[in-house]
Image 1 (cartoon, rainbow, N blue to C red):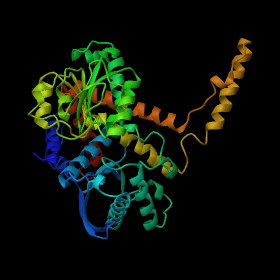
Image 2: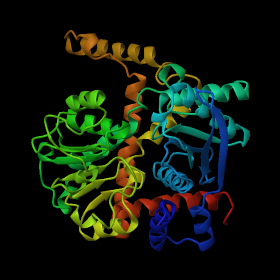
Image 3: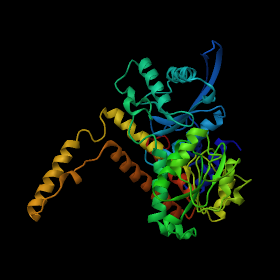
Image 4: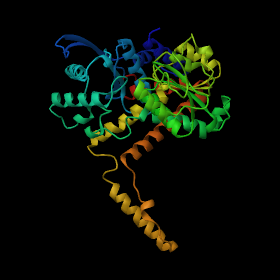
Amino acid sequence: MSFFKEVNSFVDKATKYVKIRSDLLELIKQCKSVISVAFPIKKDNGEIETIYGWRAQHSFHKLPTKGGIRISNEVSLDEVMALAALMSYKCAIMDIPFGGAKGAIKINPQKYSVNELERAVRRYTFELYRKNFIGPSIDIPGPDMGSGEREMAWILDTYATLSNREVDYLACVTGKPIEQSGIRGRKYATGLGGFYVLNYLLTERKDITKKFKIEKNIEDITVSIQGFGNVGYYLSKFLFDNQIKIVSVADITGTIYNEKGINIDKLSEYVKLKGGVFGYPDAKSTSNPNDCLELEVDVLIPAALENVINDNNVDKIKASIIAEAANGPTTFSAHNKLSANGKLVIPDILYNSGGVTVSYFEYLKNLSHVRFGRLEKRLREENNINLLKEIEKATNKKIEYKNVINTFSEEDIVKSGLYESMINGFNSVYEKSIEKGIDMKTAAFVLAIEKIALSYNQLGIFP
C-alpha cells in the first residue's frame, strides 16, 4: 500500500467514531493542490542536470499551508502527499492555524557540492514562487530530512529577491538561522517536544503507564531509538541529560547496544568522526538498523523513516510504549496488531509536532517584527525588583536580587510554549481515546478530523 493510502487508512478507521458526511470526508482526505516541477541546474563541471521536485498542499481549512522540504533521492510524489496530509492532522491536533503541506527535491544532497545544492534549492524556490506555492499568506516551507537552516536561508533570500521584500517577507519560511530572523529553540524543537511528552507520561501519568504494565521509576526505564539525525539526536540527548537510559541507537550504518546505557555525548562525537553509529567502542554493533526495533526495552522510538514497523516485524516488537518520532513509522496493519497486543502507541501526529509548533512561534515573531520578550524584558525586571523590595520591608531581610530577578529569554518563552502545547495535545488525545474507547493513534485522527470538519462547516462549505 502506498504511504498516502496508509495515512488514509487511519483516517477511514477514525471516521467510524465521528459523525461526518461522506462528501466532507472525501474533501478532508484529498490533497487540494499538487505541483510537479522539473528544472535545470548547471553543475560545477559545466554539465546541465535536470532536477525534479514536488509541492503538495493538503488542506485549505486554515491558511496559510505549512510543511517542510525534504531533499532526498528516495522521495516520491506519494510520500510528499502523505506527509502533507499528516501535517494537516498534526496542526489540527495542536490547534495551530495552518493547513498541511510538504515539498521535496529529488536529489541526494551528499553527492552535490554546496554550490550545486544552492542552485537547486534557489531554482526550486523560484518554481514555487512562479506557481504561487510560497508566501507568508500562501504556503510556508520549513526544514525536513536533508534540509536545515542553510537551505531555509537560501529560500528566504530567493523569495525576498523575487517579491521585492514585501513587508512580511521574513515569514515566507521557517527554520531559518537566528541571524536571519529565525527563532531560538527551533533546531531542536521536535526532539524537545518528544522528550516533554515522554517525560510527562513516565513521571506524571503513571495511571496510564500502569495500564500498559510499566511500573518502574524513570531511572529504570530503558529506551531504544532508531535514527540519529536532527530529531533522533536531540531527543536522545534530552533523554540522556535527564537520566533516562538509552540502551540502543541505530542509524543507516547499523545498530549499537549496551544494556548499561549509551553516553549520547560520546556517541555524538564518534558519529561526527566516523559518519555513523556502527563500531562505537562502548557498545555491541550489528549492521542491521532494524535490530533496535526488536529489543527487550520499555520504550521504542522510531525516529527515522516511515513504515519501519510492519507485518514482517510487528510480532517481534517487545517494547510496551512505541513513541513515533518519525512520520508514519508504523503501517496501518502493524498498528492494529500493536494495539491488539496491548502496546501504547504515541502517534506521530502528536509526538513529533514540536517542530511545527515552534515554527508557528517563528512565524508569529516574523509577522510581529519583534523578538519574543524584547519589549517587556526591562519592565518585568523592574516589577520583580519592586516586589522584592516590598518583601524586604515586610520581612526585614536582605534579598540577593541577582539570584531571582532574571527575566525570560526568547528561548525560555519558546520552551514554555512548546511544553504547554505538547502536554495539552497529549492530554486531549488521551482523553479522546478514553471517551471513544479506542487507541491513542485512532483517537488522534478522530480529534483532527473533528476539528477540520468543524472548520469547513463554520466556513459554510458544508452547512
